[in-house]
Image 1 (cartoon, helix red, strand yellow):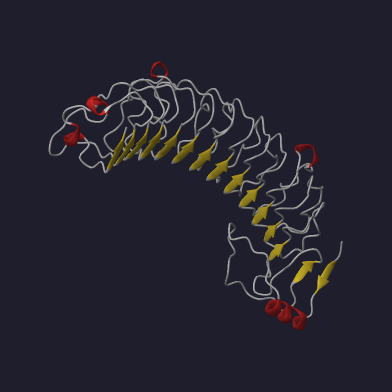
Image 2: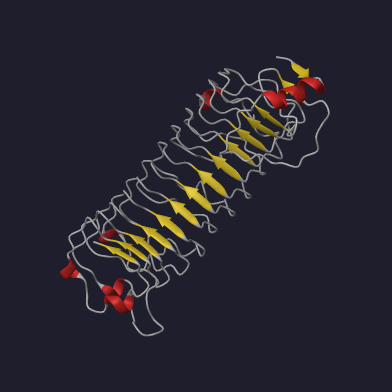
Length: 339
């Protein structure tokens, strides 16, 4: 595959007559210095006003084209790639973004240490492929790693050393046990493990997580004091699991920082105790038959009350007669209570 130097006249004409197939889902930085003669692979587009980006998406590519040295943003989504050949990014060691979503990449066809030389890489997206393992030799510079909609069944030590990682998406894979593979991710703020086959929560969860999504798994219980180290957790979603009241320690959801708690579509028979600061709680489609106000308010006074604004209890065994006396005082901020 050859690189081409496009004449400036041709580039100006193309900028008038053509529209590049930009994908709004991905960020397009602006304001970069315009190079007079951008270098681009013949299979792709390199916009005149964005010469550090190369758009190779929707081209039916089966191999990764030659990537020029100045490219920092590489878009290869929606092709027919089955692997990442060794040396694919040998010239482009300054890559910041690499998007490989919606291809057919398998773990066996990813070159050894393929990402290790990309010392500046911040965002790597390989969603909707055929990976069975988390890709290896990842650079410590990574901030976002998205590997959802694959067939990943194990993580191993692939995430070791990624201390700058803030976003990790592994939803809709085949994971049945994460173990302690996330323990070193000290900057991780957003973790999505939904749609797997997990029967228990990850061991030693990262302490900086603010959003933990673990819907659609097979989790039946939560260890005592599990969330104690997650002091800034704000959004916890555990809908569509197999949680029972017996598997939930009494004060496990008494988390001061928590804003939203989703426990819908589980096996609960009563409302778990939550912190007064909680604002949104989803409990629909359980087996709840009693409404204990102490779950929300231990004390009710002009200064002491629940901050709940949205509470869903529909699809349970509650009726209007089940609502307790004093509910209006405890849940005085609630704009919606459905049952």
